Length: 329
Image (cartoon, rainbow, N blue to C red):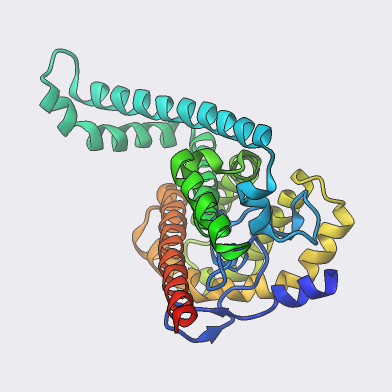
């Protein structure tokens, strides 16, 4: 079973242009048959979940673990309640923060339209003040949020299609209706996105801050190709290693097993990122001030995760339609 899973991890995947390519390796969970979460995470680690380093064992397919068909009623309710509490608290915090930013920028005693127009400038002003006063904390928080959102986007795609793939048609229809009633956000595995967010907050955010600060302070005169080369070799190797090993440790997997699996995927992880991030590096070093580079890279990761999720959903839907037509034919 381990050998079969290892072989599946190295299979090429179907890319948007309709051909097979090794753009990503299968390392971090399954999005769908067309795009896998595992493969998507190789270019954007924020898109990664527990991967082969999760705490559920190697034999059980990921989609069956995410599907409510594999959970008891009590587990489903507990997951929904926890998600509601976490997401509700986060939403309330976001609303308070937005109102505070708009109020601080516009000042007291203004009309509602003034506060509305001051929202975006207020957010940017608050960010600039925070990144100037507390650069490490601010960038760590941004990266933590990025990794939470990336994992949630991936889980949304998984959950949307998990119940379509296995079991009788009648059962799949019932599961799909139940999923729509409960909502994707409440079905997500909170331990997954909390693990990813914790790694982004405590490790990857500070790492990115100190790396870009070092480059700006000591390597500013380096030619652009040299900076990108450093990004895509030493820095990327360290970044990937910190993320995937930490994810495995937080998932309570033996360190030796985590290291063994990661060692087999190290080169694939490194080279897969070369399809996107050198281009991002050109923009980063030419146009983005060093104090805002973590924000820019995090925004690219979220946007890339959203694009992958959208394309995956579209691709999977087309596949389902083809299966239905073939069945009736």
